[in-house]
Length: 376
Length: 250
Image (cartoon, helix red, strand yellow):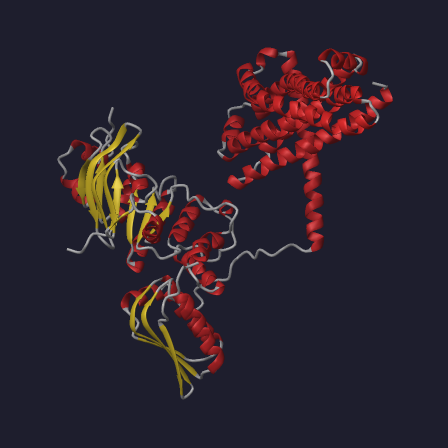
């Protein structure tokens, strides 16, 4: 909004049923706002039989000034009130010639909010369409992964290692930090109730089982979804906006093999590895708290050995393998589904992260139930 | 002779240490259609971005109605920017907004016009560029030529004195390109604004330009200035002849 309001340039006078607007000065985008309101007010208050627009002393007019004239002319025309103009300058007339009465056609498309039933229908259709797309993508991915296993030389290993470096090696510091803090917080939170029962030693059991079986894989996957799933969606989405995906398709290179398989393979390789580091740093966090409570590292490790079974580590790592597949898959799918424009890339990225986290949690729930019944 | 609306003095532009434009000077008069031309990589776009204040020159001044856009800060810079409108090569329309919203945006921020006035004014701008009726379309729903016209309408939102157009006819078919040229001439006549156009499309140059300057990649300077027909017919410079006669360099 403008910082200061200019002095009024429109003066309204009413006599003998005729309302006269005198423009004195420039009628531009700075002064027209006030003039517009004043003119509307004068028309409303006086209900004239005729209106005169006197531009004899108008020093300058831009598009806003012309818009005011067009507004008055068309409004009075629809009210069947005679409208006369005086002293219109040459350039003002030239611009006015572009807008004869009824020159502005009504917008061809009205954007109105859809009705309730339309919204429900559209949402249902969208969900079903997305489910079909996910199914088709899963099938295509499985076929391409099987082909990659059968013909390892067809895989673009250069791209794969690049993704491993970007999404894996570069993610190591954040994964280590989060793992350490999770172990530390878990141990501290457990310390208070455990102390009441003199069972501080069992903090090691709690930290060990929680981190190795659950929090290590889960936190790693969530970090991966936020960091790499979004990056996959943004990268492929931008390629889609720039028609690079179309270029791949017309070159006869399926985007699934060219773009998706390297990312999924890299994700399958790096997620269990990162999970191992999250676990180690989580246990380190627990060790720090135990040490601060007066326990030796040997006591902590011995207690971990008692609490953890050999199956706990592979079961956690298997979960992380599946989480990695889900994160990379949904990231690539949302990237490929990107529409037009910058906003579409942002939307794909958001959908990749949200979809990734939802799938991780759903899969984790399924794993919990399965492991429970398998006794793992 | 009227006072120049843009005066460029001893402008040198560089990326890091690589000089792209070396000590050039020229003036642009009010109301004229001024075209900057030259082969690919000659610095047209660099000059364009300096003229609209996106880049700061290494040396020299760019005066817009007497104020140096490169060194202006705060309110002065805002006042200078209000005098110019820019239509980018790609259109650069905001994809999530309708054409009407694209044009209204600057009005909402910088004027106190009533809502009804802003809508009418935005519709008038669209009508002026031949897009009446397309108010509620998103940029992604219209063709490239229409996007360029909508970008010009957005650039005109606040009725600037100078309109800068970057490669307006690039990538357009000949008919759409000719329509756009006609639009520029009509707007120059109707609105009385100054047009600064960067292009290397010969038909457009002859259709719209009152005056041109030609930049050269090797010397990084202006190698020709004047009316396009004069340069084509009378220039002795082989680079200018090569450009206007579309001669191959190999």
